[in-house]
Each structure stands twice: as structure tokens, then as C-alpha cells.
Length: 56
Image (cartoon, rainbow, N blue to C red):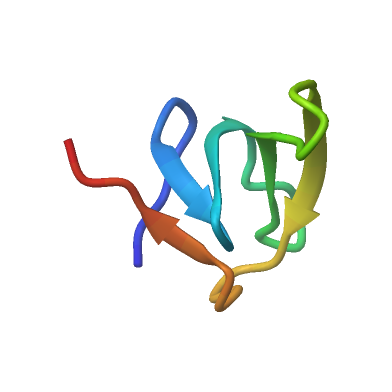
């Protein structure tokens, strides 16, 4: 799957957006909705099974 900055994705069951990357290791920074209603972020490696593109 090709992902890039600005793409909306699912990180597991949480909606998110790619905000940075890829870095030298190919990872992307994804900001996603936390369970408490705030935002969290995490670096995801290429091919991370938790990341799926969102359908419009």
C-alpha cells in the first residue's frame, strides 16, 4: 500500500491522517483519534498491518 502525507487512514479501528514521512527507515507519522477524544501520534513502519486507507 502506498501512503503519503495528507492521506486519511485507519490505524486499527481509529481514524487518522499521515502527517510526516517517510523517514530514513520508511516510517510514517500518523496522528489519530485517541479513545479519550484527543489526538495521539505514532510512527508506523512500512507494511504495518494496523494501517489501512480510509474510503470516502
